[in-house]
Image (cartoon, rainbow, N blue to C red; front, side, top):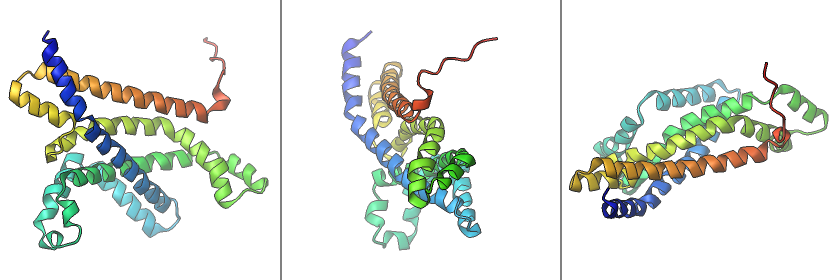
Length: 234
């Protein structure tokens, strides 16, 4: 085992960690904003808005993220109107395009997770809150949002973990995050096993931290489940 090589590789990959975190945090945050709008459209009762939301989710869940990323980064530049627009300085930036592709894709999945959480809110809880005089934003803040978040969190945490791994696709549009840096080192040394094992270890640590944090959030949101005895086996 070449400890010196592994250490050097680890340091080079850790130097690319901030780029991976930028991709992850930015795409998840932007995706959450888009997903909230999509969910609002879906449950608005307006058939046109609901149809637009369903179409968005279908397109971005039904097509590969890599193709979406290529279409945004390479495809939009083919149109003269795009190249002459005010948005071109952003659309020709690989990092911006990678973030937007990741965000737009995860928004479709997050929208379905949020919608599922809302549908899981028991109707009797809402009726009881209204009987106590709650309505509007107070009902949303005190009853609907906490229950929906608690119900959606397991599925949402899965999507978050997947997004950490999905940031590796950004290397294909020349964004040098952990996987892209690993590919560059491998092209120079051809020591594939050591390089990508170190990269995999870094991703594992990132996801371990995220899973623990989300588990703690779920613990905070479920005080009624703490200390509950396990069901008796039969």
